[in-house]
Length: 253
Ligand code: PGA
Image: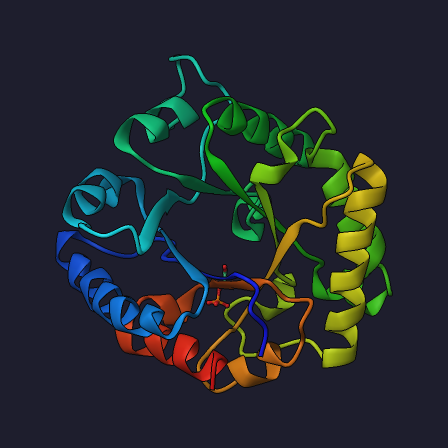
């Protein structure tokens, strides 16, 4: 068993209303008891913009942090109908923001656009959960490592506050499909991401790297055996308190 801090991050995507706060309450209650066992974990929920302020007002403890799932790259106000920027997120109390999710890349987010979003979110002192991952086609062409390297180099800069950037490795073919990578591939990929990050940005510290894609309470034991993984970005199974709690329980079993 490792003593290192582990992250369990929920990504609700387009889900939730005010009533969904009960999911968070249940996880908060579980976490208050569970943490007495001296287990070091960090729980973050990235929820829709419409719920951030309400949830932050409702959550009494520091056991759960709240984040957003995207932001606009401009930090000033402007003619961007429907958009929300990093200063707006900061003003409602968000602590984290997911950037570069493959679902947003599919809708047109490029490495450069993501870089501008990262810069503007860091300027507002938000923590970043930066998603990278290869498609099935890229995997089959053995391009995974190259794709990951380009995504990292294309969106992160040495001048960024690197300690506020968490990387989430999410193979696109694994998101919502029930398919997960092999242990041998995961080990290689996580080592690669961590070592490349240090090399590219000439930093001494390894980044925190999460895994995301079809994580559930049955396969979490498999992932917990891979020590390079610092935590998880959980989509589908973060919308049920029972499933999310079972993931954490089984991780430490
Ligand atoms: P999933 O989603 O857990 O439903 O596969 C993960 C994500 O998209 O972050």
